[in-house]
Length: 280
Image (cartoon, rainbow, N blue to C red):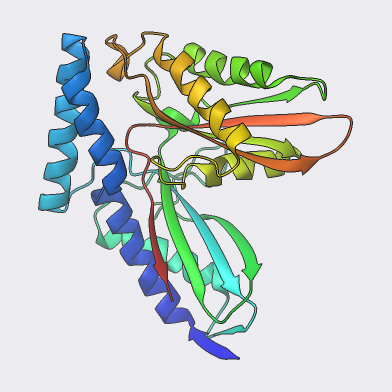
């Protein structure tokens, strides 16, 4: 049994909050630069060039890539041989978010109640998801989620007889309905199967997959490719200015499900789909 202290967890989460908000994942940066070189729409190309300049400056100056520094979504894979000391794990995560957002001068966007809308002033609580895994380490990912893209996400209970093409239809329809609102080019996480809440969580986790990696199952990898082609044929383009780059990637993850249903959730990420990870 390995002991991990509350303070180490809090300090790690604080650093990840700042890192995720200031340093874009390298593979996203590479794709944005490549898109800027191949975009036929002049306004779309200008928008992509601005995005590239922005994320490079943010990393060099240590400032947020986007003014919406997001709600702190935290994924934790906790080894079964870990014993956490000094306090509750969830409290340590919230303490880390509090420090990261206040000390890192990040915008605090969380309200305590969805209707009464009082800001918590420290961006807590985090939206925490925990999995127990083998081993004696903790793998933590902080994925700040802005709501320009989150608001454009969608869920549908498809028929169990739905075809791959009908699943793709729903993904494409979601992007079409979103238009410029989620700050395209977007990244799409798709959870297919399971139950409603598991499909939604799987869709969110799918946004963490490197966007240059396809589903290892060739069946779903082909669906991802076809969905991406159809989305980019919509012509929405970067920031809605028109062009060939409406999306950078479609990441589909599938789950076992009930014989009578097929939940499908599309979680939309903007061109700044941020996340940072650490192993304790």
